Image (cartoon, rainbow over all chains, first blue to last red; front, side, top):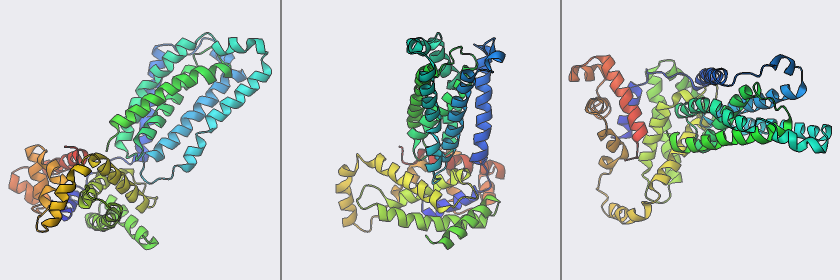
Length: 212
Length: 178
């Protein structure tokens, strides 16, 4: 088949329209949030003292970390799925969430006596944390990998890893409403491990399944 | 790659997305020429046929045209896709390059050998289900319109459009993977 002939066929297929990628990402985000919410509320649900907890800095700071992570990952994955789009600014924003966590850890180390550091770090929920963040995040991760297939990422493994970070940020946002361990020492350790697991899974998924 | 090219090409693709089929054919022809130049410059050793990469890039541009933002420049998008497909072609054939050197030498020795029949796209086309294959080749190789193809095959125009769309998507997916 000559290139000329191929163009005839492509031109004849021009009428068929797919949803613009930008719009499709918002739709996918909505579906992913719904899935994460469904898993969260049918399994562990929010902690019973969530109303008074919302008046504490430590509890609320968890949502700042996770939402900043999810937002920056969402911005990055959108440009990563569009060929030729500049990723530099979105890439730079990815340091925001880790930076906030590091700052919070430093503050916590100043405020809390050294004897309590270990107790705060280990907390009481680490197994639940490391189970439920991946469990809540796995459905959204599948959606986001599916979206990467719909898009056209020129760096599939990196885009898959960012899909994992996005799913992790989303899942951790829900999980944070359940968890009693509000110390940044706990968050910096166990949330990070759980999210790293989803990130690794996303990178592998991106490498294996995101072909176009 | 002047600013004029950029403005004209993004204008053509915008018109094409709005439903102007002539603008789309025009866009694809000009993009094919640009990508051909780019790919030929990049392929300095044998093993990868530039025209295969041009065709694969055009298919990818077609099936992924929803990933272009109409307010963004079109050439960086086109070249990012072409680069991705070129790297993919090298990776796929990387192991075979050494093996094929002899064959290439033969090809050079016999300039009359037509390589068109050995195009990757033909192999992908042959792998399609019969209906899709006859629709795609009727429109591309034989140059028939959708209406003519529908009459020849005795099916509706909608059926032809569906087969064409699925056939092209399948070719884009299978391209060079056999």
